[in-house]
Length: 293
Image (tube, rainbow, N blue to C red; front, side):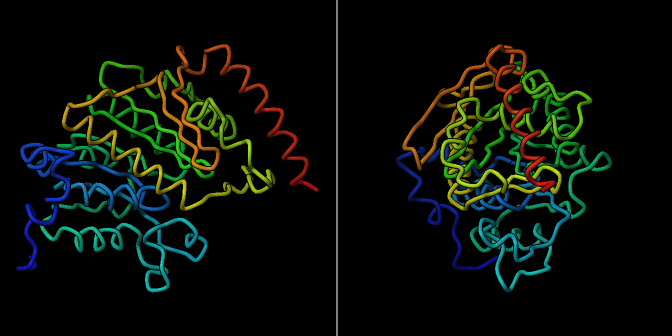
């Protein structure tokens, strides 16, 4: 460990917004983050600067040029290097005393027990289209009574959903079941952000291509998502402040300057959600026609 590093001094400017005893409590917390790309990497570095002491991080991918617009670990020097290892080094450069375990094969059915072992909170940083992994991790969190948070970067804003022990489950809210991936994508997007603030300024809808599993993104959304998720993490880990859990959600959009607290009792079964899904299916069908031509 660097002799110049001192935990109390390094995070002393947090004091005032947290007490000294709360900062010491954060040092003893362990957070799991699956995905070290768009949001996952920013989640890790934000929580490291908050003073969280231990992490489990998972990612099987390497950095590519296409990641440069939004992923904090994506640089010329990190090209083709494993995302999890790059982010581990960046986090250790903030706090050399971190206990950080890397799951370089990503999170899967073989390592999910170890990945969530001893965890106080799970934060979702998986790629939007990682449906199977996301479904598995949230189900495991539910089984193990681990609170879980997903913060989605949407345009120039972010939507946040918390799933707490004893509350509504991920599956009850989204209703993924055995649906195909296009339907899961639609249900995830509509469920994350029922207010749909981001859709009001999407200037090129064809940039969303479900067949190719890609969509538009910004670093603005990723940074906002990390700030909102870290705030939820602080409240959950310290047991201080109101935590709005599903079917309640939060959506802030910096471009529009709007904040909305959403509420969809019944999740995907809510009449407004069913209407939004129906409209979404028609729009997706129209986009498929555009992409085909």
